[in-house]
Image (cartoon, rainbow, N blue to C red; front, top):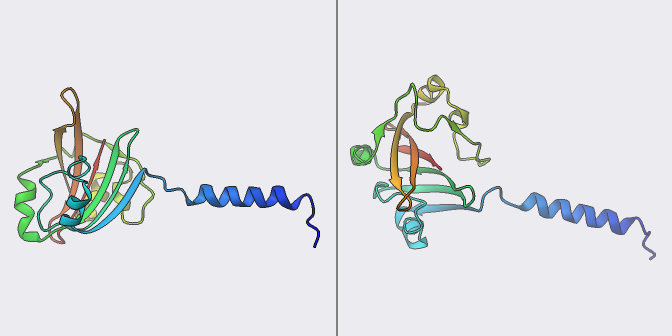
Length: 161
């Protein structure tokens, strides 16, 4: 069988397109069935997950980029730990939250009301209440995490940069 000269460049283009399409849009994307699994993997030590995440946290979805440093996280927790979680964050001022726009992470598990410029009515309509926390990432730099919590369903989301 003789291969036509044009078929080799076409095959290369198709292969390149397939490889580019397989690349994740994040440096890391992970799922942990339980908080202990995320801890064992080092996500708390590396600072991608805050230490105050409820002990009952499970179904943890995590996506992060190293440069610029950004993190998206979804998790579920037992509703009895809601107060413990809320003691570690403060209510975000709905008029001017510390973060006013969340880039689309392009993952299935991230809620649409938390993408792009904030629409407080849309966020509240989804049963979410906004909270924030600022934590040091170095001696001279702080990171702000914006949490969206659904107390009744025991679900939480946060974005940080």
